[in-house]
Image 1: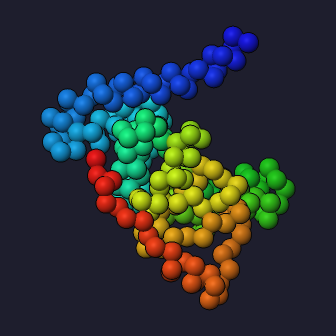
Image 2: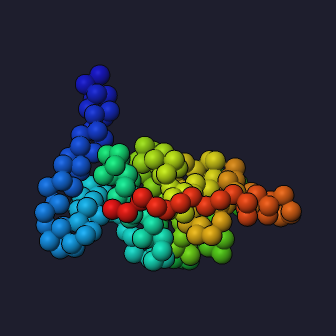
Image 3: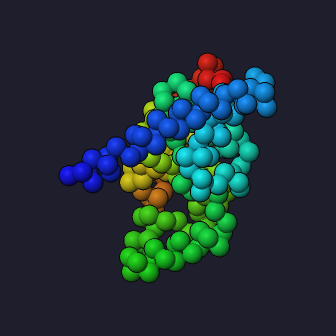
Length: 200
């Protein structure tokens, strides 16, 4: 029972410590980046909380959108959004796809969870796998303001950057969007959310 309580309290304690670090880092961040101190302090605090995350390789607009979104989550709602996986080179994506094919026993089954390099938005640097689940839920609710959208029903953690259209939500990666007038009408008539009021 004690271990269960520790397990449940640990994420909350780490989140509280990370938020405190963000506040403590504010003076140095304001000196380093006047006008963007809150943004920078948030990135520093999250880098300490999620030391293994790697934003390198993300397309510049994707990186800007993601860091702005998570700064808003951090300061406005006290929510942490970490990056589990962003850009992957084609060799790494191929390795993941091959491993999933071996695990599931078929290419069709593997494609339900991992796409080959030529089809993965991770290889293009426009996909983000985020954590924890609460951070992903925040991004699902607010990410559209940054053009970040959850793409698959079976992957709560997977978001993609789409700057000009709202993408259709698919059940899983192996399902292709239907092409046709109704699909295109849906994609072009959904208004993009306003980005006003989201500056940090």
